[in-house]
Image (cartoon, rainbow, N blue to C red):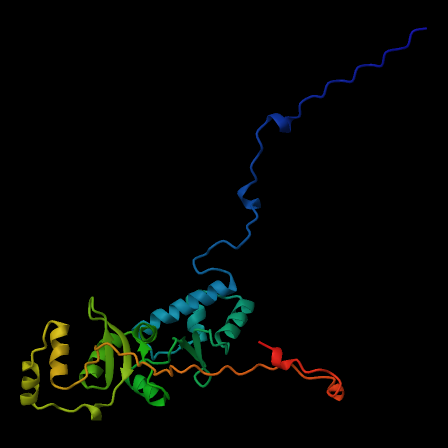
Length: 261
């Protein structure tokens, strides 16, 4: 009796999905990781950034002007009540890094620069209040004081401030406080006589002239002081050993200390 052969398995038929190209999802079904950009942004911190940029730009035109919450919401075109409440909390944050100043009495907002200095009177008050004579960067002042360069020229002419300028284009770089009462007017005759003095171009000639006049030039080399040393050899002290023990047997033990080198 012969064994029956099992029927051959039918060959798999190719599926339509394997041979045909994959169909793209419709555009409506695309899942975005972030909301699409609508011009002002939908994320809460994006809205905050837009607000800071807006207030900073307005401060360049008029640093004293305040803006209501409605003005900011109209600019951002935000109508959602939840987002508006979140933005209001961020605007009123007391965090030192917050660049939005809030006026509780006016219930309004404006840009907060690194230094709350917006005019010459503010700069004078800042210098008078500080305990040190540290200067300020003009770049930091310009953040909230758009006309700082022009105003500093006027203050410098009145001897109210000392200004350091760049050598390239004479732009103000740093500014310090100055007391006009300490500025003394020099006699023109003294100024002329002072400028008549010719300084030798060779530093050696200038040094020799000072030394000839009995003066010690600052560029003269320092002479090292030679300490006197005693040529006599000091007698080396005998170094004794550590703590002596067995003192109760001193009468019995023999003393060998004289044999030490």
